Length: 204
Image 1 (cartoon, rainbow, N blue to C red):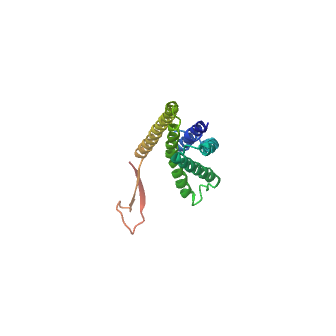
Image 2 (cartoon, rainbow, N blue to C red; image 1 turned 180 degrees about the horizontal axis):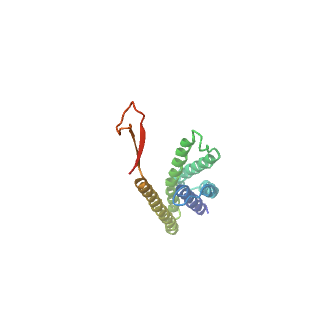
Image 3 (cartoon, rainbow, N blue to C red; image 1 turned 90 degrees about the horizontal axis):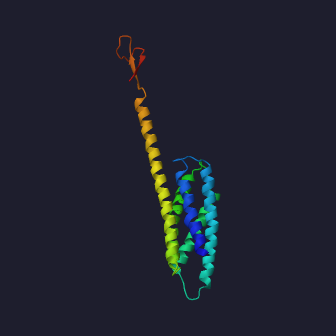
């Protein structure tokens, strides 16, 4: 149960929430503000499941008299601490106009991507402890990661395709639009600082 809760919560739902935040603000589909509520919901449910699994892991580690899994336990504590900070960050999120919003974004993104690295590492560490059934769980989690990776790759391709298409269209419109040139001339057709100029607009 400890492993299942953490794989579903921290190992699956949390990355899904990150994917939604990464790709649905602007490209390929703008779902403002729906993306934010879905992102927040995914992270909260992931936190509840992951924290429950983490608590069970601490209990199992305490009950184990002959085995101590130090690195797995330390990583688990770090993951719990970082996810707790992320949840708290939602409660203290500055407004778009706040001068501290940029710093909050850097902190939030850095901690989020750090978790995306730490969580799979710790899940694989936990799977190694499941002998002799670790092969099944290893391939199960491999499948989850591959599926998430394919989704990310697909969205990344679509995002860049949409971005480049819009950039190309904007450039084409700018090149095809008429350019106006203003020439100041005096009554004789020559530029003269002392005379009152008249403006001629030439479209190219």
